[in-house]
Image 1 (tube, rainbow, N blue to C red):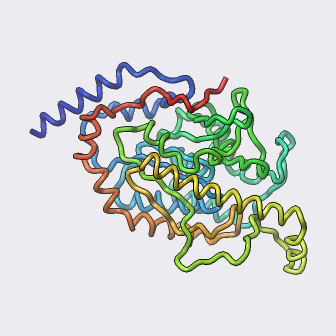
Image 2 (cartoon, rainbow, N blue to C red):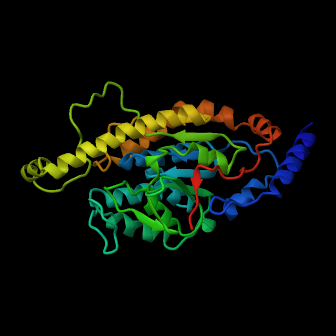
Image 3 (spheres, rainbow, N blue to C red):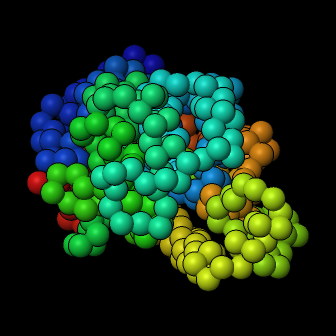
Length: 349
């Protein structure tokens, strides 16, 4: 029986994969092609959909660490905004310890100065860009250790763009480009902004990459029990004496930014809920970090622990969805390779 099952899956996988037609930009990269040619039933394999949320994204490190600790194999990652940032660095092969150290090293010393070629925006992200250059350099998607996709939105056409080719750092800079706050990015003839504008948690993309595996979606909008917002948090950290900071926070531009970012959070939260209802990921992980502002000062250790705790809470669900029987059921249904790209996804020139 065991041999029969193995033979069946090998045959089904091979026949489905060999006639794959790679879409223009949404074709899976070299590593994904290799991973899709499965030789036998894999246990504890999953794909991740990492949602956006600014500094809340540090909780993704805890999710990744908990999954590692329990022996899960992450075969593909789709990320939006902060999820795209963390997902890209992890897919490049960096450990969760290295990513945590990088976050701590940056600390409150974020540089929001503009670079000379930046598009118009309230803030720049030169500090983060420099850090990403050190980590990712000129690495391309095909050079990543884990297949990865980042989402962005075409500012003028309104289409969702799935980035799976070219330089990874360019894709990350596009997916974190919060409209109006951070500079938009031009790639392939398109002006791109934060993918979370349309899809805060890219479940559909993760499933498209590996339809034979369960999607574990991570959303970052759940707040701690009993937490009630009494005022809008300042979205960025302003160093300096408290008396000066208090005056700065009362300036109209700063107050306007607080209102804008809070409105974006409300929209993103409801879009995430709609996405979960529509695309139905197999498992949803919800770290309690929804009280953290876009660029608010954080305690990285606490955020990472929140991610780990939330993952532990649904560990049994993940194990159930990742077992070999569930994978066999997906293969029997024919879900062993990415389908043609959905029409709602746009192309780059």
